[in-house]
Image (cartoon, rainbow, N blue to C red; front, side, top):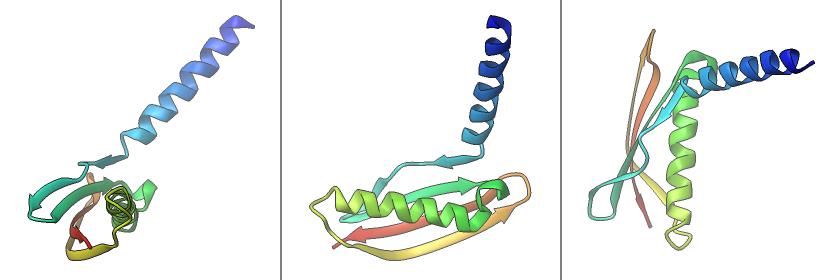
Length: 96
């Protein structure tokens, strides 16, 4: 019974780590006065460009709402897609 639980735990841990490695987020960083940027990446399993854009918008919206409930204003958005790295989105925004 213990051996079976150990295998199950190892399987769940492996699947979790694989899913975590399929997406990344740079976090929000300041690039100017009231201007911020976030870069996200998502493999095709997590939506590629669309998934990366969704993650970038969620992160930016959360960041602005934590700054006194301000609204997100997108200044610039660039995206790219590569077979191995998936969808990549660079989102530049301000909070107004």
